[in-house]
Image 1 (cartoon, rainbow, N blue to C red):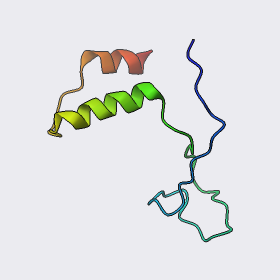
Image 2: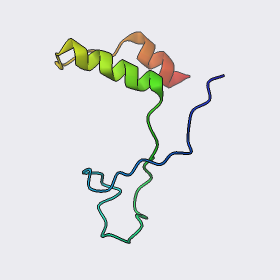
Image 3: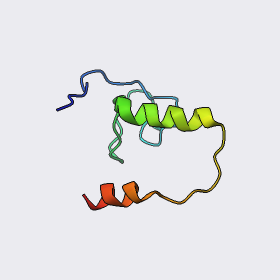
Length: 70
């Protein structure tokens, strides 16, 4: 079982985050959005996609539908 790190909060103020579009000193109470790092597996998959250098339209692979159904 993989255990992820959920103790370090990322400061997302002033990053175009919808959640953190509040005045200094205010707390956002409008949207559920996580302030933790994404899982390493997701980050690696996104970095691999970016490294290919092409962002054209694609069909979702069968694995996508299997994951959603699970």
